[in-house]
Amino acid sequence: CQPCKVIAPIIDEISVDFLGKLHVGKLNADQNNEILKTLGVRNVPTILFYKSGKPVLDENDNPVKIIGSFGKEKLVEVITQHL
Image (tube, rainbow, N blue to C red; front, side, top):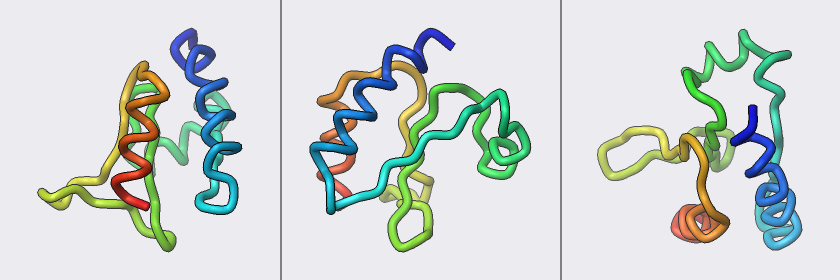
């Protein structure tokens, strides 16, 4: 999708900026529909955050995620908050 193409370079930059501090992965939604269903992803792009193999939760025990288009600043903010 177009929003996915827009954020792809941001994700790539984050993987370099936080090298050694976190792992970044991408998943092709068209080719991995079953995984998306398992994770509860309904819209793309969706960024999910995990720590020690478990979803990062917010203060209300909801999984931390970013849905839709966003800027690098927003992603850095969320990452920094949960590192």
